[in-house]
Image (tube, rainbow, N blue to C red; front, top):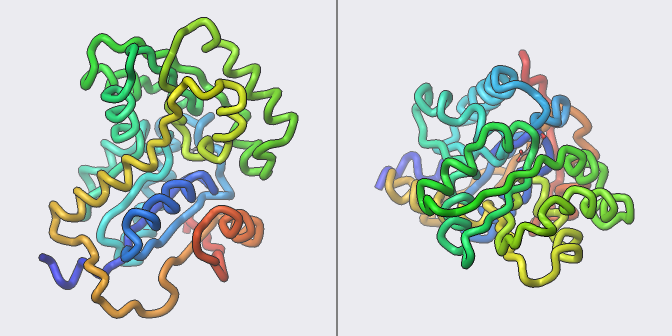
Length: 274
Ligand code: DGL
């Protein structure tokens, strides 16, 4: 056990509020861990940007988090996981985990009929990382991807069950209608916030996969493997979790307080490019 490091915080980041669905799951499954969260609210969305840009943004954020002394990093963004994770991993002195591979693995292993839908940003879908990873675990699976770019703005706006959101979701999910899929991966960390809207349209027969759950489980294994899982016996100095954003701190804080199990008092604004 690495005593010095086990009490250090985890770094978690996303382009905005979506990664809070992953932070929430980490808080549930690993309540002893401390989180330093960064939401790149000034530059959201990532899903319409190029691999180079998403990698540059991710690298800046990872360096910010390393400066805060994090012991491991969770890329709580499918787009950054698909575009930047592998390149950045090689540069890091700490372990890093993304959301795509854990989500793909559980879908591949739990589908009954082998027909899996994936919804995500344009970047995530075009990267084909879900399809490739599903096929590593289940070579015969049929994977149908659909980019749903409007979902991110609707979630950032807080319109989780708004009739407009329902209409947009109906339009996007139309393409799955004849597919026979039994599993749908919510392949963007913003989308689990639309779960009840998606459930209302798809009915009860489709299994909705939230990769956050498997990511938190994978994170536990990763921390254990490195001997840095927090045993909860350390003295926590200051606020347990810390939140940083690149814009609109108050709006972020209010959103976070509507979905997290703990109250956050402050989201600090920083200039990530400096
Ligand atoms: N929530 C992020 C994802 O999982 C990114 C959404 C975006 O910024 O476009 O892909």
